[in-house]
Image (tube, rainbow, N blue to C red; front, side, top):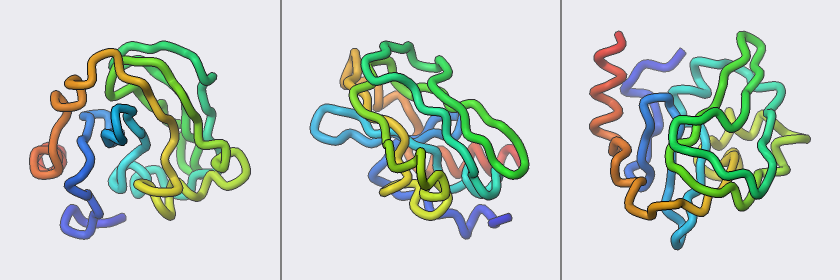
Length: 134
């Protein structure tokens, strides 16, 4: 497993305590799991995706990731309607491990409140949270 210093935690996304990332993409929010989460899970072999059109609140479970180690829930970092899912993950769930912030994104959300993303942590705050978990 990676040391905290080895993690790739870009500064153009926000982070939830439950290890999801959220990026504002022209009013929609793209969501995935971050480098720490994919590293902890190990090789991801299956992604359970939600239905497009589902409306969920921040903190609600929207899917699961199955790895060789465990099954882990994924939670909404912001409230809103799911407008897209990454269908490529059905055939290639390993994209979450390989490119968690690009081709490994999981869902796109039309947020109920566009400012809610600002309640999530920036990368420095998230790193401090991880250091507290050591």
